[in-house]
Image (cartoon, rainbow, N blue to C red; front, side):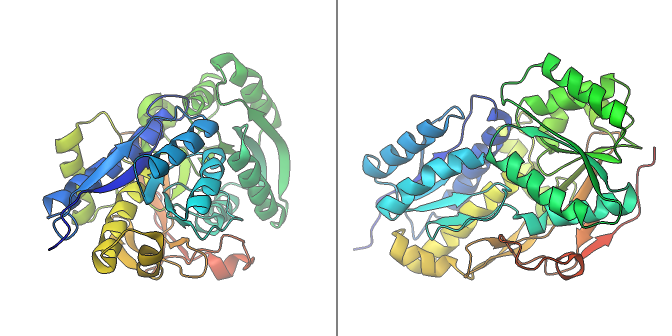
Length: 388
């Protein structure tokens, strides 16, 4: 007789705390994907049931909840984590119990765990393209500002390496602020930016502090058309928080923007809003959280089981038609082939796509083994749709 028991999966994103805006979008993308999977008959008639806890952005709570999900809730697969500090807290747990973590967030690279599937961008899928575009169009004198944890430090190191390879490349300053920074913490930083007059600012500020940086930047009179803030993390969710007047003209590198014109993407956005309303702004992390759950379901249908040993061989090499385009899990490093793009915020508060990778996307190279621009940068520059 066929097994009709529900399949429990862990969902481990924060809906409170400093990074709640983005993590809520990842949680709800996961719930949305699960609802679609169940509406289509589940997995061989078995319903997917999410087991959810709110770790409040605190690494030790991600670790404790991951342990609880596996030990008490009998979960084999966890969809979760935004910050690198929280991913690093969960990895020892899934490795110890031989379970699987799906991680839908761009991150600093230089990591491999056989128990993680990485569906966000590695540095050769966002940092490389951003460095190339910004130095070509604005110049190579850069000011770096980030939040005080692993990802910004490593991303700034990588961006500095790219910039210093460019003729005239210069790092003017590198500043960090706590995740719970306040409005006043940004005032001396934007004053220093104004005094040093870089060609562009590279931001790895995340969470609630993102709005504060961009607000302070606008308040001091910096012109985004001439000296934009370039980011790997500022997406539609932060733009909605800060407002289009403050956001217009700034640039982000990501595989996904809401403005991708495909009918598949636009239909999915309509369905999501119909189900969850307008409170959550879909973004690059939302899209990765959505497609990884769908990809998991496809692999489990083939495997017939969600145990690590059964599922992993069905995941490695698997392709999926995501909203950003075709993606594939690289069997060698568990990272995902993605479709890099650059977007610039327009006067309506949405991203105009100003560059995108050639068809087929970019193979993940999390250790940046291939290190010359021409080899990994396949961006096609599109006509600018906003001028200062």
